[in-house]
Amino acid sequence: METLSKGVQLAEENYPVDTVFLNYNTLKKSAEDFMTCLETNSPSENDWFILPSGAKVEVSHNNIKHLSLFGNGDPMHTILALCEPTHGTHAIAVYLNGTWWTVSNVLKTSNTSRSGLVRVQSVGERVVLFLLSQVIFGVLERPPDADTCFAPHPEKEVAKILWQDGEAAGFYTVKQKGALCDGCSGLCYLLPVLDTVFVRTQFRRRGLALRMLEDFCVSYAEEEFIGISRPVSSGMHQVCRKYLQAQERDRDRLYEVEAPGGWAQRRNVWLSLQLSRCSAHSETDRLPQEQQLLALHSSFEKNLSEVESESIVASDKGTKGSDFQNAAREDATTHKPQRNPRRKRTGETAEEEESGNSKQSRVLN
Image (cartoon, rainbow, N blue to C red; front, side, top):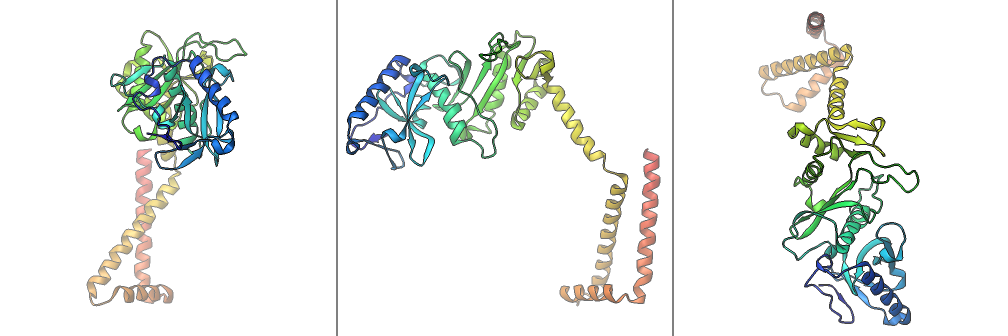
């Protein structure tokens, strides 16, 4: 349980997502009341938020940010976030209904029936979706080399949260057929599109992304064509491959798309996967023939050298390894006459091998 240093205990019976009376009006009112109280306090009267690790963060104007749930800046859809002083974008707690909650606890539920994929409907679920996309993926679990991010999802966007073991493990969102692509062009999506998919690090490698892709495809089984927003990550391509290998019926209807999803902006996922695999094989097969012969010749020389070494060792078992290596180096630099016949035989054997390989290549071609 988190506490404030003045001894005020924070609720733990129900997590925010389980609070049925949580709404935007109460969020706005409680945030305004808190900020008013904070303004009337002197700095010495500020509370300290104590994390489970024991670390303390001062609850002050400098450490509080206003987060817009839908990216439109509407005060009605804004929550307060307490951030680390050294990382202004690292939210560690949010203020909901008169209480500070750690981000990790906002992502939990005490409702045992909340399990699996649940469609986002309540205000509490919208807050969870926001934290998953903007705080967890956007900051805490964002790969260092990532060049993409999720924009805040619109208030009415279709989304499902995947609940696992009492926690929000991930989510996916959908651009509905007929939904506006943006607020400027007036263009609408021509097919349902799986827009964003995310699984938290601690829940990965359990097949959850595959589960969400399957749920999306089944949910729009009546649609002739469905899409996935481009660009598609390499990890998501692997998920698609695994799914389409098992579900042949969806191979002709799943497309990578760019808005609004006309035929000029579609590319069949299964076809792309097959072409990429063929391309990878052809790159290997296009090695110049001379490189293949050189590789074969090098392998032959290596094997012959090993045979020579084994013969020498067998004839003189008392020679130490280091003495043998020195003798071999000395022999290579002095060019002793008795080694010439062996070297000549090696060249002849290699030429014969190369000639044999050339004949074999002509037969194969």
